[in-house]
Length: 86
Image (cartoon, rainbow, N blue to C red; front, top):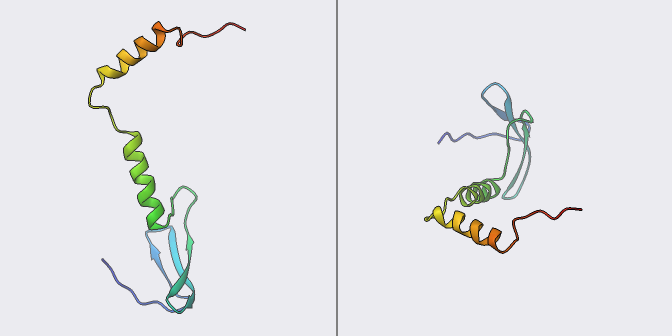
């Protein structure tokens, strides 16, 4: 981990297109300004971790993949899988 000391109005550059600047310091809080392309996601760390966890859960494959097809067959046998005509 790189540790830097910056004062208000000083900043750092990450790569060619991300700039981080210290805007304000009040007690134990630091206000940062981040200039990055719209295609670069910028998140608070706790939000980023929550997004990653939700992505892992969404991508989870059931332990018994065949169970999905049996549920689908049961659903269709009850007539729930057919579209109603208008």
